[in-house]
Amino acid sequence: MTSGTETGGVTGTPDKDYNLIWYVEACLSNALRLETYIEDAERDKDTEVADLFRKAQADSRKGAELGKALLRARLNGG
Image 1 (cartoon, helix red, strand yellow):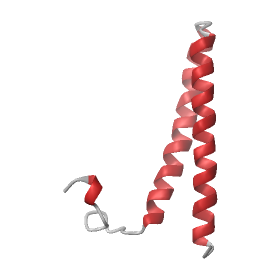
Image 2: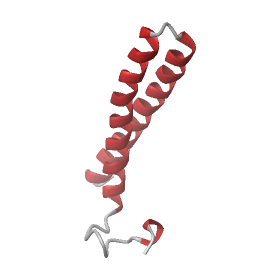
Image 3: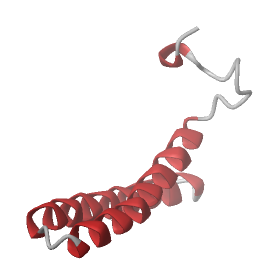
């Protein structure tokens, strides 16, 4: 069984809201990890890479916020 066909039989969680929870966690985890990468690039005075990672971090934060808003709306019945 591939992950593309998992509908709750393996995990016991067929609820698509679980996928939103995972997505938010992945975005937040990525934003946190990128902070370390930004610090590494800054330490090496590599502003080009640091800027790239800052943009990626902003995208991860935005994804987390969008995911949280959608999850909040769904959990509130909206």
